[in-house]
Length: 248
View 1 (cartoon, rainbow, N blue to C red):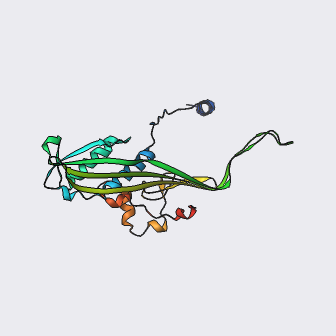
View 2 (cartoon, one colour; view 1 turned 60 degrees about the vertical axis):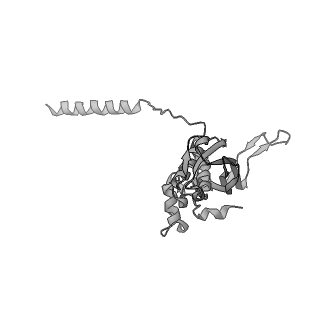
View 3 (cartoon, helix red, strand yellow; view 1 turned 90 degrees about the vertical axis):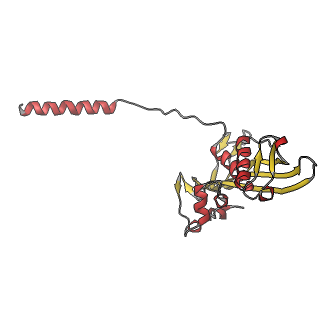
């Protein structure tokens, strides 16, 4: 092949590459979201697990027991009831599927199962400009935060008691148990979110763990929290965070 032919071939290929590069193109990825966020579900179920781990069911061992869950009404009822049964069985309670098969009846109730949120803003909040000010166009001045933080908290309150099925005599009470969990999002100078809280077991920035000094050095609670296993009480302890200094 002559030198001119080779040069012409290279020119054609170059022109084709330029033409392909100039053609516009785009791609889309379809995403969907569940009606409830994962953060909300973790806040609630972690708070429930933490409360459940504080109950000592060992006084109920050795006697056939029926668990009455009539008064348990929660959005995660399946998780709530199943984890309650598991905790009782793990501690040696003899559960029966029917009340007439049991000697004692354990009645469970849920007083609180929900979330709260509070926010902190250091900066200029979003401001609406009314049309009555002369020389200033009406509209909205956007929010200009220096530090912005939101703190979501999950709360669970439960209580159980037991009575003898035949005599109706009171035999045991768990007392009232209240536990919380947290999720924190912080923005500094518009950069964020820097995320922390008990449900995350550490501090993250856009999904990347930040090795803060207060979380380093063989922190057993932090490592247990990252495992996020309901069977370990340390998994739900709140890890310390330098970002707590932004709290009011």
